[in-house]
Length: 123
Image 1 (cartoon, rainbow, N blue to C red):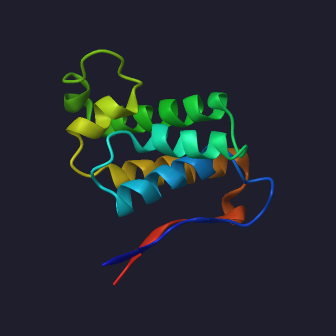
Image 2 (image 1 turned 180 degrees about the vertical axis):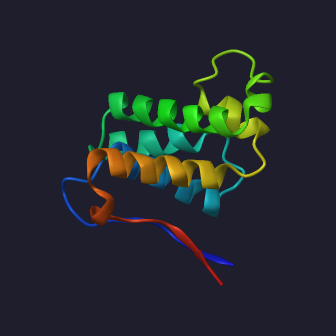
């Protein structure tokens, strides 16, 4: 299967929490060995002047809340900071759906669902 990365269609959506989470989901899809895709995507977007560390923190917190709600048994295995995505990345077998759902939820919260085309798998 091939993967098509997300696209951002408006300036209002550029650098949003949803944009950052989709970038992280894209990274997991194309480079599954990445240890912390939210951190890596955040660094890239911050360096490009497209987002802020505050938004990166919000993205990380939203993704970890969704991971914990779906995998409460795994939450007990997280040592240290349970809002650190790298800790979750190590124990999840499929992080992409969580990151994608977190991105979709962030887009909905921000009212920008129609301004971001989600990343997707194609046959």
